[in-house]
Length: 213
Image 1: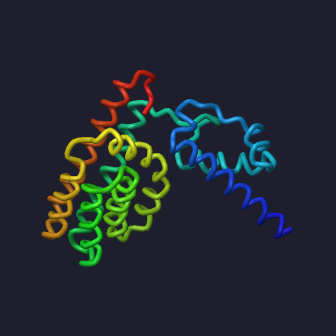
Image 2 (image 1 turned 90 degrees about the vertical axis):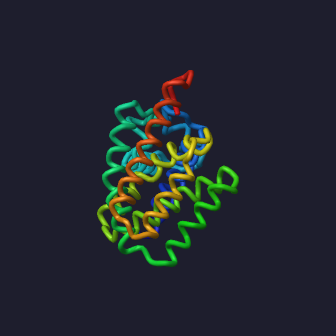
């Protein structure tokens, strides 16, 4: 029984990774219906692991009613409002508690952001925000952001691939405030940074011919 359960979990994880990666790399654009039977046949597994994978992706906000999420302006605003509350608070905490070695890591992320290839910039962007959130020491906050990481990735991809102006400059300003141990300034800069991300994503959403990011 245990062996069968392990196989089921393994198949579910495989299905989860395949579907998630196709959503994140654009092979399954927003609004696409996910057909369980087709995926089960393609992956050589039963429909049960597919359903489990879809539940997990639904928990992360990538799939709604077996369709790839197609965020509305309201969805975007709600997501960034939550991020601003959590990450603004985390930036304030980071100014007090972030170790020196993590300051160095933030600086490295900024350098990659200026000189790296798009995929490297996206990874550095994610790491920059993750280091700051981890500095909060708040496990609930960390878990909440972690559950949002896949949907956040879609918008991070938008701001990087469409070359949002001053993206890395803002990271550097946040870093300098944290380095100076100025919590209020770090909080304000993080909130402003995320507002700029939101405004940029909304602009892309509105100007896109098919209405999708």
